Length: 261
Image (cartoon, rainbow, N blue to C red; front, side, top):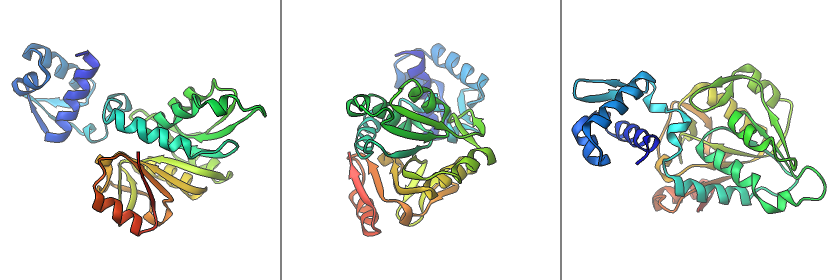
């Protein structure tokens, strides 16, 4: 197991349990207690957890981990969700993408889509994003016109937020907004942990003809601090095959087209 994989697993365990014991973590990861201690010391140095005598506990940022530590979670599910989302976006459309691991996967699927690359009329797709990592992925694709909002970068998600980020969105129109969220539930809609991110995501949703929410099943039926958009604004929810049937039915009853990829 690589160092990155160990760190991701340790943070995942800590996020689920709230506290972590060195001996138990070593047993779960199949490594020595000395290795776990070194990993925890480094993660504490990055202020991703707080060290205790026998292990670690949650720190102030652990509920919203940096993007690089979220990448390994639900990897297969996010890949299938991203493929399904990319297929819904026709050539010639204007698409808004916010930040996050699932939308980053969507951007990758768009970047390698053969019909876009072979488009004979120059620009095959216009993507508006507030995520600098997504812009970096798409900027080298000559067949995708990439528009980046202004704003201040949030280190956790690589998203640009603030008044400069929303200002440009009030001046444009989108055919689709593809939004990754921290939580989505039938009654209250989609939400994010950070109010700054939620504000930009809300602006993307308001400027779009159709809102596509991409969220793996672990985010369904959950709530987060700041609302992105109400359920009635969501055209399509793309999730994975582990989505509970009762939650899917509740979304469908509210007029949301649910795709379990």
